[in-house]
Length: 185
Image 1: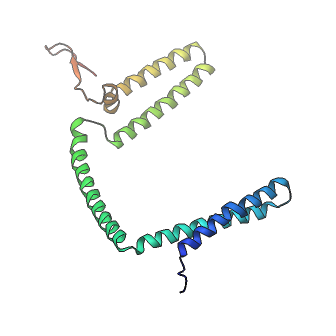
Image 2: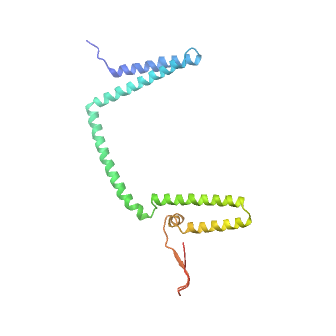
Image 3: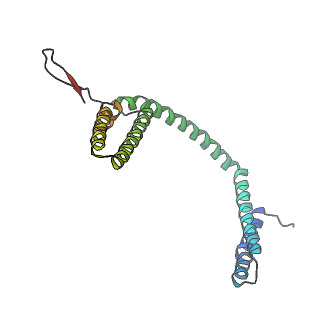
C-alpha cells in the first residue's frame, strides 16, 4: 500500500528541523566566530519561511473542512449584523444625548484651544515687553493683560469650560430705574 502524503506533517517536520538543528548551529558558529552573520540571517529567514508555510497549511486545512467553513461563514454574517445594530444604536443615543447634556462640540473645543493659544502668545509677548521695557511699560502691559483676560471671560466657549460645561445666563447688575446696567458672567 502506498503511504499517504500529509503536507501538514511535512511542514511541521521542516520547521522542527530548522528550529532544533540549523538555527542553533548557525547561531553557535556566529557566536564563536566560525560562521558569518549572513549564514545566520539566511537560517533565520528559512525558519520564518517554514513557520509561514506551516501557518498557511493549517489555514488551508481548516478552511477545507466543511463544518468549520459553515460556522465561520455564519459567524461573519452575524457579526456584521450586530455591528450594524450597534452603529445605529450609538448614533441614535449619542446623536441626541450629546446636545442634551450640553457638552461642547469638537468645533467649539477647537475654537477654544485656538483662543487659548492666541492668549498664550499674547502673554509671552507681554512678558518679553516687560523684560525689555521700563516701569511705565510694565504697568501698561499689565493693563493690556487685564483687558485681554476680561475679553476672554466674555467668550461663551470659555464660559462653558469655566462653568463645568454648563452655559449660564449672564447676570444683569444695576438699578431697575433706568440706571446703567452691566453684564457679567
